[in-house]
Structures are given as structure tokens and as C-alpha cells.
Image (cartoon, rainbow, N blue to C red):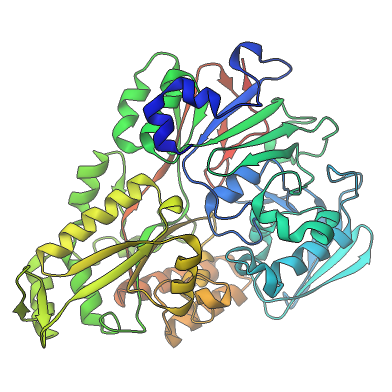
Amino acid sequence: MTATAVALLGPAALTACSSGSTPPSARKDGGTLRYGAAVEPDSWDPHAASTSVTGRLLRPVLESLVAIDDDGTVRPWLADSWKVSSDGLTYTFSLRSGVTFSDGTPFDAEAVKANFDHIVAPKTASKRAAGLLGPYRETEVIDARTVAVRLKAPHSSFLQAAGSTFLGFHSTAALRDHAADLGSGGKYVIGTGPFTFSSVTPGQQAVLRRRADYSWAPATTGLKGKAKLAEIVVLLLKEDAARVGAITSGQVDVAELIPANRLAGLRGRDGLDVTRKAIPGVPYTYYLNTTRAPFDDLRARQAVRHAIDFAGIVEGLFQGAYDRAWGPLTPSTPGYDDSTVKAWAYSRSKAEALLDDLGYTGRDGAGYRTRDGKRFTVEQPYVKTFVSAQNHTFDVGVQDALKQVGIEHKLVPLDSASSIKRTSTGDYDIFAFGWQGSDPSALGTLYSSKRQFADGGANGSRAHDDRLDGLLEQAEATTDAGRRLELYRAAQRRIVAQAYSFPAYVASMDVAHRDGVTGLRLDVEADTDFYGIEVA
């Protein structure tokens, strides 16, 4: 059953598609939380996934070496201490004792090695985790509780990255016997977390169940012992109307990514509240393929950027709930460079002049600009399953703005396999996505010439810029925190000056929850922390 069907059929359909979980009237022993998720993961294996929702939904199952506090401080978790070599190439972790995977196998140095080796294995085809792991060389098992992670080059963001779900740990037995099954989710996704992954129904729901013997939560939670909830049922409700309808009708207890135009109504509704936190990382951004025409020419990139009234689209769609974006990072991300604000302006006349300068002076019967009889056409492939409704609506707004200056902007829906093929080969003009994360090192993943899609990176603009590469490499190599952030600020200015991409809007994570839900908090990356939640 699709989210559309759920929205149309109403509460009865939603209850039916949640069969196998505890009905609201029979909740006990900590309760069952029904959680409405906005996007379905592209993979349930965070080592292979690209979507932020994968990390968010699997945090209760897969844990990390360290935890990141709200102020960005790195704290102990599965590692109780660590040392970094003077050259920045070796991180030696002392592992916490007594930690086990839910299948009973111990969490030890061999598990760290097996997981990090799995991330970089070509067969995994990692889309996000490999970038976080950086210039990985090897993991050496010193003894059962001591492990050394060795890098080929300094990677200053590694400790922060080590707190991500994307570098979380699968059971060594699961990696050995069921590596091919991890992406499908369910019982083979086995971690050390307070919940187990009980089952998944593709396109409909996932069920997590509490682990009774859990006792090693990080200090950042302020809690100890097993989780409060007995069960989490994640309902995959992609359409905004389905999530809003589910939270208002009581069919879910929590719903994420509430659309901006519904926030005011929910905030004023009895029995509901909304928790908000700015999303750090990279805003929803349009990347222009610089390796082929028309966007191999800076003038074409600038023309497109000038042609779009971002402020107008943001205000029209989000009614003041969000701000327009200006730079490659969101303002809540460390190292954000505020000098990018108003670095360019909406100007139809400038866009028209640049297009004339490029030679697109003709017009065809549909009103689109032509050069030598060929229409100015650009294609933006996308996978509907992984693009939120509000992002797709923004795409349509961009499409209309470009049409006003004579540019045909085609939105091309694809399945996941076809999209991966096109992006990895550079067969696109525009590609759009956001990137959630609390560290500016995401810029390396998104703009380094060494981090193309085919290389396991996400360089959507396919930039090959020696000056930008130098800034990004220096930022990763330095151990001076202040110098590191200044280098990332310089990188942002370079990206904006070259118009490699244009950001759309600065979103927040708006999570609606019913009054019976207590203990809900959003972590440093604005993700729901399920561990301390209770349902009355």
C-alpha cells in the first residue's frame, strides 16, 4: 500500500497496514511508538546508503565508537577512550567492555575491523560511509579491546564522523553470513543498540523491538539501562498529507518533516505539539554538471542562478517557515560563511543578457531559447521515492522560473538503478539533494574532484577545481580547529563564485508529536533520539 492510498483510505487503512504491531488500546510495558517517516531509505545498510533517513531510523539499532554532544564535543560511547598519533594518521581506540550485539556475539576489535573493511569493500558500493571514513588504509587489531584505525592521509573530521550511524557497527556474524541481505533490512541488521530490527515491509513499515539487556548508552543521553519504549513501528508515509493526517487522527504518535504550510495549524491544535531544530549540513541544493554543455560555461551557470527568484519561491511555498539559502552550508553548521549572503541576486535582466551572450538568441514555437536551431534544454533526473514532496514542489518552481527566461528544464523520474547509472556516468545536467550532517567536511564529499559519484563520493557538480581541492585538502589535514573552519569558509566562497551549485532553502526538522509522547529530543544532527521516548 502506498502513502497515497493510506491518505485516501484513512485511519482504517493505516491500522491495517500496521498489522503485527501492538494496537493503541493494548499498549503496555513502555508502549509502542508509531513514527511517521517522510522518506523510505535507499538502503537499510548505512554502509551502502546515501539517504539521511537511513541513519535516523537505524540509530536505535546500530551504534558508534563515539557520541557527539549538542555542542559538537566528542564523547565516549562504544570506545571509552582514544589517542591520535602526532602525524594524524592513526587513531587508537580502547573499547568498552561488556558490550554485545543482539545475537550474543561480543563487540570487540575484530568487529571494528570487519565493519570498516566492509565499508571500503568495492562490493559494498558505499555512497556515504566511505566518505566519512576518509583516506582509510586499514584497521589493526591490537587486542580484543584495542584497535588502531590507520589512514593514508590526515583526516581531521574522522572523530566527528566516527559518531555517525553511517559508521555504525553490524554484527560480525551478520557481515560474514548475510552481507548481501543487509540493504533489505530486517532480522539480519544486527547491532549493539537498545532496539533490534524485527521486520520490514518494503514501502510500508519497519518494526524495531526493545532489547532487554541493553546497558551502555552514552552519557550524552543522560539516561541508563534499557529503552523506555517496548516497540517502534516506523510507517513509511512519503506524502505530506498522509503524515499530517496520521498525526492528527492519532494513527501515529510522532511524524517527522511536517510541511511548512501545516505547521501553524498543528501548533494550535489540542493534544499536539511540534519540536523544531535547525538541520545542519547542506541545504537542498541544485548541482550543475560542469563537465558538459551548457554548464561547462560559467556564464550558463550564472544565468540559471540569476533567473530564479529563490526568495519568492521560498515565501510562496513555505509561508515564512523557512528562509532562503545562500551558501553551500546551512547557518547552523560549524564554519558557515555568512559572507555568501546576498553574493548574487535574482535578476531576470542579467539572466537574459548572459543567455544572449552565450548565443541563445533565437526562440522556437514554444518560446524556448535556441542557438543554431537547438533548444536550451537541461535535464534533472530524480528518484521519486527519495525526494520529499516539498523538495519536488520546489523543483517545479525552479522549472517554471527557468521557463520564463526561455530555458527548458525537464524533470526526469527514474528508478533507483537508472538514477545511479546516470549520476555515476555524468549523464545529467542538474542533480538536486540535501546532505544532513554536523561537520563542514561534507564539502569535501560534495565538491572534491576525487569524490565523484563513481568514486563513492557525491560531487554533484562534477567539479574539477585545483584551487577548491587545495582548500578542502588543507582543511582535512590541519589540526588547528580555527584554521580548519577558515579554510572551509574559503571553500564556500569559491563554490559560490564559480556557481557550481545553487542552494534552495534552509529547512528545519519539524517533528509533530501527541501529548502522550514524552522524552522526545532531537540530537546534534536534528534527528529523533528514540532511546529516551515514552508513550503514555
